Image (cartoon, rainbow, N blue to C red; front, side, top):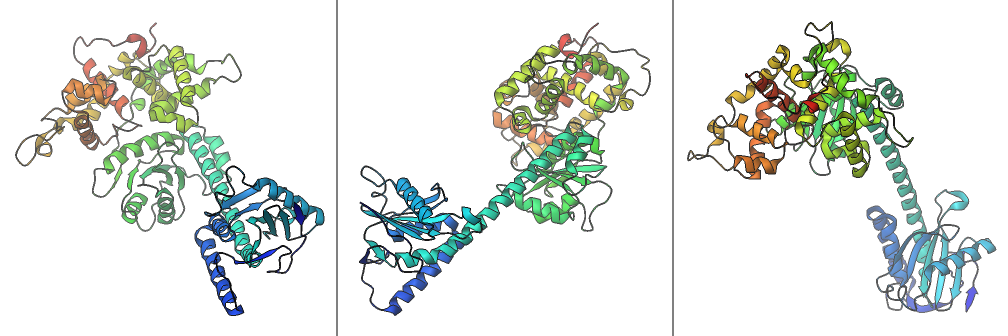
Length: 565
């Protein structure tokens, strides 16, 4: 039996059958004063729930008071939010339970037909009550809907009329919050896109995209990487903005969930000191690494430097460090190195995809650069599936004739890409008197490269053992390297493709022992080893250049080192 009872516009007057029971009290209520006090208590509860739990908590409380179902529905009957009271759960779900969605849709249709504001509909053992929710959405304002068993509890209509305002305020607040989050997400992804363009050297496009955001991109810059703890990245971002007066570009790292990347102006520091020192002082559990001054076009280099500095800062009491300047290998290879890099990369840079949806040369080059920098995290950086990443890497290896599972081939490709990223005059300032090099070994034999290798490996001379690696009793702790073992540890690690398990087996120690040794060497070398971007490619090149200085050094995988004539 269905009975539409039309309008009940006055609060507390419902055109439906009312029982002796009161809403949620389980007892008779006699006296206006008691009713007023209970209503006041309900109002306080509504506003408390609105502040603490919002729409879901209000609806959950309301469904319990109505001993039924409560929700917000659209003008077409679509359920937007819903809650069922604990005691009514068995009556509104399971066999024989009413079809709440159908009852609500029927009530909404009847209300629209009669052009009523508030409406009640009796349907068998249940009554559907509808109240408009004024949230300034015009004709599309949602409705508060309650499905309750008959007879309707006394005072329920008054309760619904009272709860409409808190619900409307919650609805408005939550709508504003959703819009704010969408705006924040759009800005965050816009900044991430600008950073990606800077990292791939697309400076003009980066300026165009950044034009809609603030502040303007500085040039020259320093890159800071801030490592936060737990879920504190948003708070640390606010601290960074305050610390440098809003002059920096702050980007949430797409690869590491705890990292913030700051692109800061290099020409001036804020009044209260460098940004890295200020942030480390203000946030007690963050670590900051800072690059040296670089051009905006060299943001990728600045990021690598800041990441290496971050590895050093983790071991310092001050929790901040600046990059220890050393020449880039791409800057010392000379014009012969640029010719070698061009020859090695030509099959990749001239690749034409067979299908329109296949990646082109520029996309493959960006994939290779990202993978060499971030390893498997490149899928997060590039926003692609891991299978897509694997397929692209297989194609890159096939085009270049490289086995990208081998560290030696990875180092060769990394150097070639970095050489091409350097402006031509920096590494090809004139004709090469020695002629073009045909493979990587010839590049690594050059005096400038040998000098770079010696400078890069010089910190290892006094590392590995000593007082730092012994306990109070004089015994070496677990994982500690004996004196002079730093070189051996690194060579074993590189020979095992920078994998900890095989390295531990080769050295006869545990995996945690290898990790401890490499962590100590990060501080010695002032470079990151265990987390990408890692210095493993530079170390492989440096050790190879040193070995080639010895008489009769064997060539390694000539096809992987470059192109032979």
